Figure 1 (cartoon, rainbow, N blue to C red):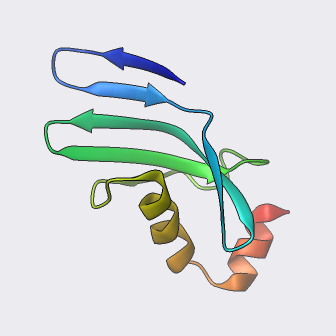
Figure 2: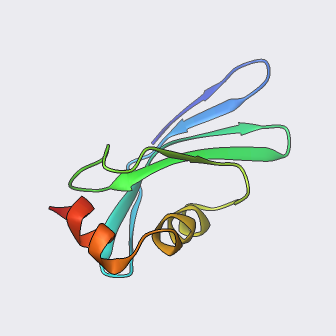
Length: 81
């Protein structure tokens, strides 16, 4: 993981990965600006399969739960291919 701090935000590039609903996800990066954290997450094997940004969540687990709750099982299987 590498962390860069600018005048207004902290940007974290993380290799951290977790398994949620049977899929291994990783945090591609997160940006913390004041009280908001923005996330970009993806499947570990296909990091750009999901390029989503979230500011409603505070942890990688929550970001990934948000992604997986918005996709059907069939969509998840298609992304993992």
